[in-house]
Length: 80
Length: 229
Image (tube, rainbow over all chains, first blue to last red; front, side, top):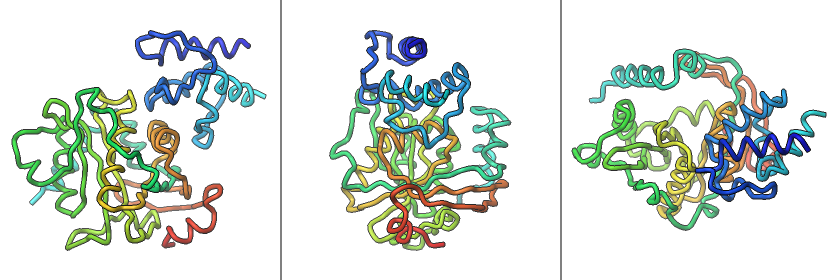
């Protein structure tokens, strides 16, 4: 899925600390602290702009952001 | 005697310097901004201090004695005045320190330990009645250059750990839903329970709640216990 590649690339380049590891789609981004409070702000701003969606505070839950797979599915649902 | 006017002026100047004039307007004058009241069961708080030492950050309780020592200085002047102001009202706080600089602080209020202090007015407009053993946690601040790496969420957790050790069982707080870092840290990382969503209008120091709704599965028991309005 094209969305997944775009999202993975963004997280890898902008959020992975030092860019030291290669991100997998099922890596837990919360447990590994890949997404912190600054990272989620950047990520939401990016997703809203890149995919022309609006993300509400109710949607900021672990299930929607814990992996690249989850983010990709969440974005796909929002685009329907 | 703390010069409240001076504190407010410095607070406003430092806020504008850090965030810009438009953010200042957004913060102090708004209509129907959404706030969420949250609660943390302190039995679920971490059972140890976490890894802030990894970033050479220590934490400590803020006391008048600490502030009167010349050992520490505040990175932001308005936080020093705020600390004096809060202590004078009987509020209690924790700070995080890096190389003798206070880089963050957060505060809490126990109405059952008032001892001549001042009742926190947030509890009135939020409609929270704190049961015995509960505290109201407010005004967590970390200087911008030290944010990230989950420093704020770990600081919040460490303070909850300290409160539990003092015998508290619950902490209440609120965040603005447009404050994404606060939503992330409080709801997602530290797993505070959302209780109620409020619509709030504000014009500087005047606030008015224009609507409220109970959130999710907390409808009923939590609300009845918690709210006073």
